[in-house]
Amino acid sequence: MRTTRSLIEPVWISSAIPSFLPLPSPSKGFALFPARGPRFSSMAPPTKTVVEYAKSGRSSCKKCSSAITKDALRVGAVSRDARGFDMTKWHHLGCFSFISLESAEAISGFSSLKSGDQEAIKKLVSACEIIPKTDAIGSEGEDNGEEGKLSGNGNEKDLQEKASKKRKISLPNREAKIDLTLSASDIKDMYKDVKLSPKWKSFETIIFLEQDEGLRDSSKIAAFDFDGCLVNTSVKRVGADAWSLMYPAIPEKLQKLYCDGYKLVIFTNESNIERWKNKRQVAVDSKIGRLNNFIQLVNVPIQVFIACGLGKSNKGGEEDPFRKPKPGMWNIMEKHFNSGIPIDMDKSFYVGDAAGRENDHSDADIKFAQAIGLKFYVPEEYFDMDG
Image (tube, rainbow, N blue to C red; front, top):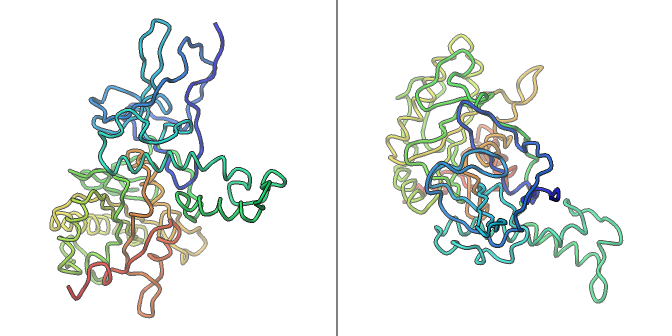
């Protein structure tokens, strides 16, 4: 019997396409790429690719070894064993290599998927088709010598321009991502020395509401700042009820986005949680209380990430990688909390009030959007103050 390599090899497409790793059960952790030794196999090469929504939570991904949750989108490589039976190796969407596929429509079961999931798969397949064309000039558009030149009627400059245009389809100009692994033991029920409300967890300097009831992961992300964007607050007042709705149109607008297949996500800074060391519980309860009450008012599920760390003004310390304008919160959401679904950057957007204008307190929101590669709106523009 011959020693063969694993049938499914990891393929790095780009930083714009997330490599998803779902949280495992509390009893086991994971690594991004588990070590794999030689395998012995009598399986033939994959005969077809299938896609479907998992009928139960019993299957596991053949790449990352983590469970595939019920109703999650999963992709399978079908091979025929020595007995003549078809065997399917299931994967999370973000763990599967689409490198050998000619088109998304060739995948069995593709036509039965939701339109948003179809678009996500099309982007992955298209990105794989781009790779051979961009390799000649390097992953960052660098000239690698003679291999980057065209023969015939073309020239090197034309090749670079065409390849650059193709890359922009799926590789927006984004700030380098933080390479973080995440295991069940990293997720806490407390933030430092204070308790968190039910359903709220923490990771490093982030507090997050991962799975609000009814929340659906999606390729389309509608992202928002909180204070000064969705609600009106004051630094002089604390408490779960110390806020008011910023614009009357907000509930209806958010509900429509949810009905249109968007996942709603709030990314908000709250450095008082770090600063108020003697009153940290008060700061945490105030912030989470406001967010809980806001979500209840607008009556739509929302994913929330709170950056508690300090910014550039932190004397003698480094700037927190999760605090806006740094893209750390987005990177965590994209990589670990979106069911492996690639994000459609053309349809996704971010709304925030800190746009660097004359009366704005900062430019953190617009720079956050720029670091990610998202379309940006100020709230008065997006929520249409004049109706």
